[in-house]
Image (cartoon, rainbow, N blue to C red; front, top):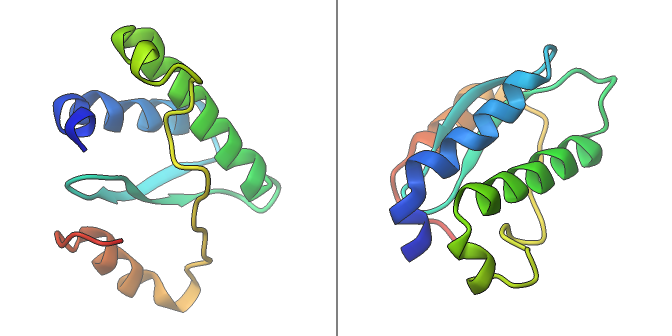
Length: 107
């Protein structure tokens, strides 16, 4: 959390840049004071696992490249948590957007 607060703007910008590189994907929502929740629209031709692998691996490399001092704190070059949560939005888009915007700490 200490690292995230110091580098929050940059850490948030990097995944957005990567999503923009995929022309058929778009970010709809993002928020959280101490971690990242994102609502991303990806077409069905993309595998969710492949997209998340791309997003997490490329963003970690970019973060380590821009902030070289983090390489020494995270010597194994693993920046993000191991897993992720994915759900289809469908009828629940409003509920999911509210959850993402909610400023409370979640774990």
